[in-house]
Amino acid sequence: MRLRKLIHDPYKLLRAMRLREGHVLLDIGCGTGFLSLPAASIVGDRGLIYAVDVSDKYLWRLRQRADRLGVKNILTIRTRAEELDGIPDNSIDRAVFMLSLHHIGDRAEALSRVRRKLKQDGLLMVYEPIASRMLGHGTEPSEIIPLLREKGFEPQLFEKGLLFWTAVFTPL
Ligand SMILES: C[S@@+](CC[C@H](N)C(=O)[O-])C[C@H]1O[C@@H](n2cnc3c(N)ncnc32)[C@H](O)[C@@H]1O
Image (tube, rainbow, N blue to C red; front, side, top):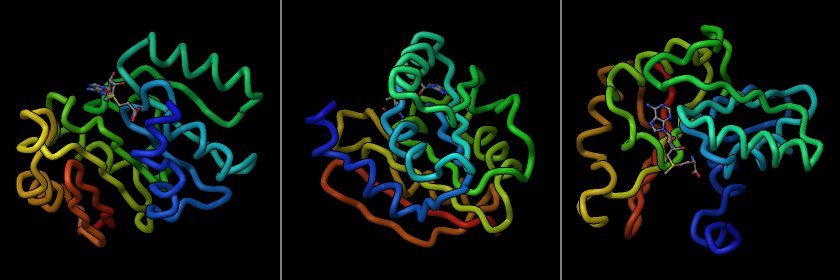
């Protein structure tokens, strides 16, 4: 985890999406909480993290880590990105797919769902491996950004690094 933080600084990503105290963040495909845990310390007691994943094992590990640290503002929910059950519409200030979008079977449906959950002044961040530079494991921004536009998102910030790409979107 420490090595990983050198490669992907979670606080840098959370700053790029302008996460603030009191915000409600939806971490889609949260895994064991690489972003959810640092995000919880930023949003504080007045904010909330919805940490969603299809894996009971990862959600359980995240729950354990949060409990050990006394973190009370993370709600773990087992749901598919294509469903987002338990997340109220129009309730999310920030949503993020951190290395998870390429795992999702029906990306178009997942993006439609997240659009419904996001407030009009909300932001969505996508952070992905570049498929052509990672032996096919990832996505190409040239395919995903048009899909995001189709689903009601406008890119505000885009960066393509050596192995990863990241973008921040506002709802149209
Ligand atoms: C590479 S991991 C990234 C985990 C975490 N975001 C991180 O950066 O450490 C991808 C995650 O996406 C989850 N996932 C895969 N398909 C999903 C789906 N359809 N809906 C929600 N989560 C999904 C996996 O269970 C896994 O936790």
